[in-house]
Length: 284
Ligand SMILES: [Zn+2]
View (cartoon, rainbow, N blue to C red):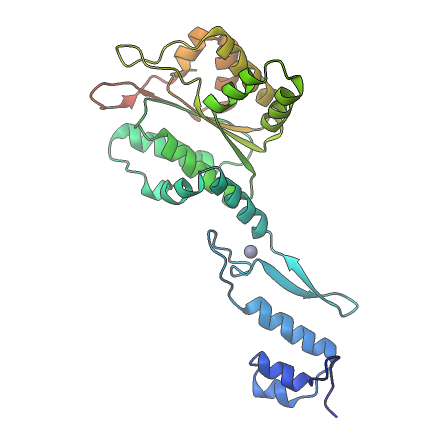
């Protein structure tokens, strides 16, 4: 007598839907055995989730599992968290860049480019919470490499908060008299597992193409943010148009904390009108 399931179908009928081999169809299976086969079938199938290639779940995002008492449950694969993080990055506009700005799509022809790429790749594969600092004029490749680092860290399951410095500044200034809003923003900055601060302390260029010194209040906000991250000891990635030695001349406390936490991941590319970038003396 074939085993009949709740909805009146037989196990054999159900198995045929799953394209089980004939040997399974012909055998008498208990419901538990059937569920086990169903699990195996599901867990070996390929899914169609995009954006991240997961060898564990073959891009299904889920596993089916039999509990000890024979119940069939669906459990989430760890890649779903990575997928959510990538989706979040897409929502803030970094997703498109994540696909475009990878280490293998970075043009490293000149020495300074090779150096930048080398440091960025090493950083992305270094465990722990060291910081990454890269300074140089726009077009030198710092955003590309910081984005590639973020892509790599997302794949490692890290949570990344991306902030354009100008937006932080705007929020802090507009919420100057609203302590709760300011607190909310600072908490987000403080608690981010990984913080990517883009265009840190961005100011307009002077006539010689050198960025102007940031205002005193901007430097104070910068210190506040950097100090929060310094105290919490969390991973921070910073790109800026100001060289670290220039920042040191503006504010020693901020530059000192960045220098200490970035160690060898401290890359400064000299400004050059002809765009023949070269490595600046690394500040330490
Ligand atoms: Zn997975």
